[in-house]
Image (cartoon, rainbow, N blue to C red):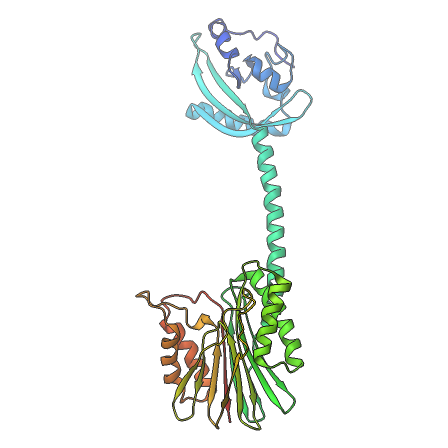
Length: 386
């Protein structure tokens, strides 16, 4: 019960009008923690009537379980002269209002010790914090969903990577490494019965999910064209038209190199659109760059000319290397790009090695040239006529 004998000290009455003008709640307690003054802002916040707080001690305002904490705070104020902590103010109806309590010990003119408490309502701040907490939980949940989706997408993307194999009298070594979890490169090594082998490397502009989705769509169309035996040059033309008509002009382009090998007659048919030149490494040591006859695909309707492919005769030991620009667009510490010519030097140095060792030497050579981690997808296919 409040102590009704507690009155506002005379010296405090002189300051009462000033304290009543403050927007924050102010309460002043004596050395026994009895309320000797509470301003209008504090009374409104606690939803008491004028005079109801006068003479009250903490045990008539706060639940019993919180009293030890309040005593410790008072002792701290008495020891250090002030304190500041976050707690709550119980309203008359029991609702708890989060608040900042700032306390300071003063010596009154009457010789008694008092504590001045400024109580700041932080309900709005707490509501915002709660909203942020819930938002963060939603973001974290969404992040976990995205990570799971990316993991699945990476597995799907890995299925677009070319595979090493030995088929008839042809050996193939392949390598694929996306710049991120998923990328825009795809590759194919597809034997067709005993007649021919198709090799393909495609590079979709950009990185990430959108590029991977377009790469997957191109992959599906390409597989269909290969099953129908579409000639490499006509394949470029069909895919170019497909992307323009079905995907639309949304800022994506792609490059592609296609090789078809007929082992029985040792014939190579090659076609490329906007792609880095293929490297034909003859067993004699000669190296030839196979420049694309078509421009970048997916943007211009006339990107592929009427005659888009070339034919070459192969001998035992001849090798063909297809790759994406992730192997050429790397920079050393001097800011110099490796480029096709630099890659050709690496290939020349590795061409005498067995096919698996050559593949490894090319990748290591590119990584050694780079001043830092490679930031583009890397796809490599090397085929040898046995």
